[in-house]
Image (cartoon, rainbow, N blue to C red):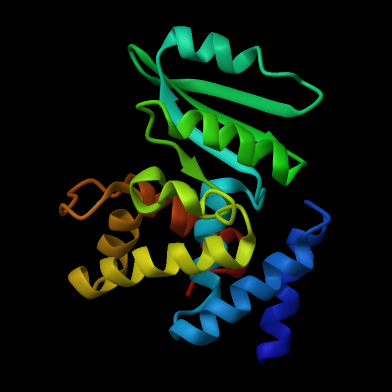
Length: 192
């Protein structure tokens, strides 16, 4: 059954990037160590980064958006969407780990709450000296697991734990992020 689950997870990823085996191995490793179903990590990663390990996400104003859109297109792919009336959510992707680490180091010094890597680990959970490692799939998943474990310990209910992972430790009444998670889970694994 474990091998079958492993291949169910790897096949959809294998068309996304060259690092699919490293990502699948990291998911399997963290799942085995934590005892948390690998499908939960898979679904969180799908929602957070679409399996792109060299990703930075953040909410910015229009002037920062313009600066982000002016990043060299040969190095970065930048996508933006309206977040609210005055802000945008921006994702910057790279195919090169060194480039995304360099961007993370530059952004880290400013007052931005950047999210990094496969599980989009928030700056508040990452020390500056960890930026060299945070885009490594295994390291990123271990950090994400530690955050998720705190949420599970506090809430003990999957819906609130998933919301907590995305939005922090205050109880949420609206479950928008959990709905995204469930949609991803159902799309890849069917209803549980």
